[in-house]
Image (cartoon, rainbow, N blue to C red; front, side, top):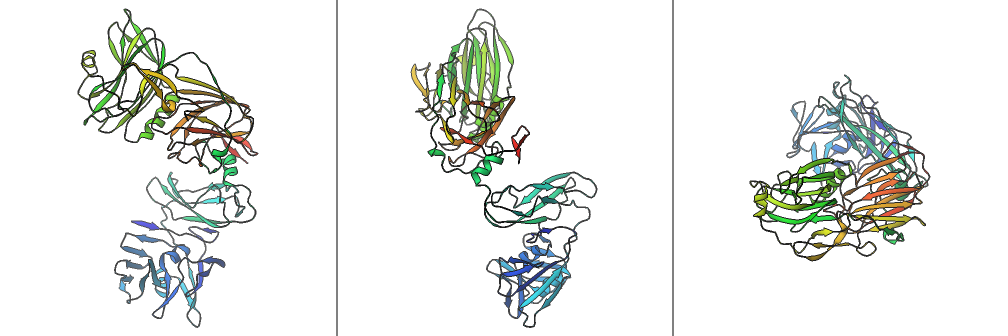
Length: 565
């Protein structure tokens, strides 16, 4: 059952409001609602001597409600079968032609509609013009009441609209959900815009819609881009068709202490149990595994550490992010990064000489489900690391692992050991807008390593798993956004801005796809931003970090960088 509510074209429509009056003429779209000029989407018509009105549109304008079950409509005392156009008023069948369909619009006799609603109707002498006056729908006295206001009634194009909601429940029950229609923070085109709110309480009762209409006119105060630079939240996207024309920032790479990246992504979708990749190390390393289960049954991914020393060795997980199981590749990368940047880790496992211990075990993966794990470890001695996919019935014991085949690469993805898992970048802003390019293979070259199982050199396209330690100076009063350049992107970054440190989900909802629709990352409050960025598995590279001159802003309020003008 669907409850179709009122959509007002006046300034406000709400439960308990005064009567609504519609004045209109047959075959004319221009009409008056409570004395204000409006345009009807479907004009009244003269059909077989009757004045016929577009049922749903007129009912909404009058602040009434229709109960729609699909083929049956109930409106006041009227019941209507939309398939047969048969109507009943108080149980009495109405004459044929009282309800008709013209095109896709359902029309009803003006007299029958007035009788159904208990409304008053009067006609001009030629019966072509009419005045219809109806009291608003009374509603359920136990239902919650939707209420809101805007800070004013008339706005300039590009001017921020401030909403104040004050919905309530007659018995004080919690308002559990809100459904807005037509609500926007800003309107860029002149016109009249109706915004409506319905609320639902903890008992499951829903309010009638409460609506306000605002007018947008005059000289613009902001464009979509300048508005976003003032008011968008981190993770929000905005239009900018000039992104690829902005100059590239001349950044410098700073040498760092070696920390290897051990990378397992090939075969990306193993079809049998086996070893995906294997290498040995001592000390710190970053591990990245990205695989889909193509075994034909439930399976699990394991990362195993075997002690190669003659003494016990500790394996400390300093940081861990993982996602599993899911079929959606972009979710794998984004959730893993949000986990990873949250700092989860600090797990210590002691491995005895010659023993093998799983330092990561995925949840059970269904067929065609994937797993992504990003794990920083530190060992107190030399260990052999083995990435393996096992059918769910096999235990990850040393005896089982030693009998497994080494699975060949799929020739589409990479695996290997790469000598440096951290890329330090330093940049100075000298002009705005400008952009820092990451992962394009030219301005930002791929890291080079080796597949130790085949002794083949490897080039890590996109530098997935590499932590970019980015420091940008000269950032006071700037805004920075992510612009995808290679296709779909869905990830996260951590920003340090003076005393503030925050991980930002990019974008907040959905995917970043269009380079001309950057996603806001941050508005800088200090002269230096530190950004930690890891390319998200399952997303496309390259990306650009675009730096803008933010417009004059008001006081900062809240960690999410909301600005109050």
